Length: 90
Image 1: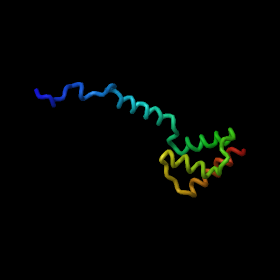
Image 2: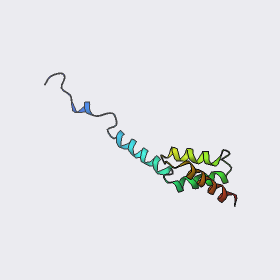
Image 3: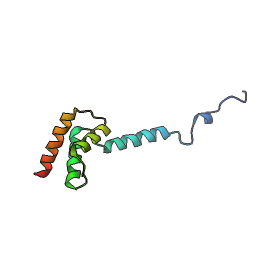
Image 4: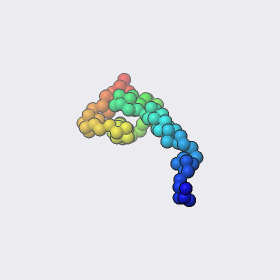
């Protein structure tokens, strides 16, 4: 063999399972985040009830939906925000 020949150790990092652990952590984080419009709407309702939302509900809802990768027409977001406000105030 020559000096440039790679050994088995050259193919492993300190933690050969680092990729698997990182993927598991990403999956666990994704499980905690809301993934549907209904989940996000309920989360916003709860935060309004707790007094944590002081901004325009449409704006907060739009940011949450965008953050979750959910695309909705602006008028649909506004309509949902109105429903949320109505639910919380009753």
